[in-house]
Image (cartoon, rainbow, N blue to C red; front, side, top):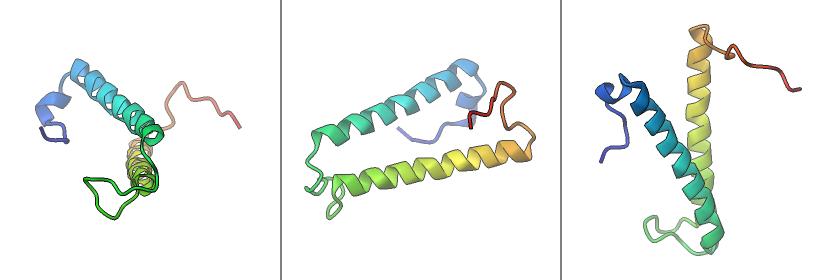
Length: 88
């Protein structure tokens, strides 16, 4: 299974909703894993990297891409969303 959605997949709103749900479930799973792994032991699949460091990479990676999405939407005039209300 590839982690990148195909163009065909993105043409259907139901597929998009399922993809977002899969992403959100992955976030929940990653968060729950941090509670069940000794943070000082190396990860079996990523030698010499303790779980807390891998989790930081995961968070930084997702933050970077979310920033790209926001920047792209700003350039297209689609950000902030119409329902946006400043909270600060």
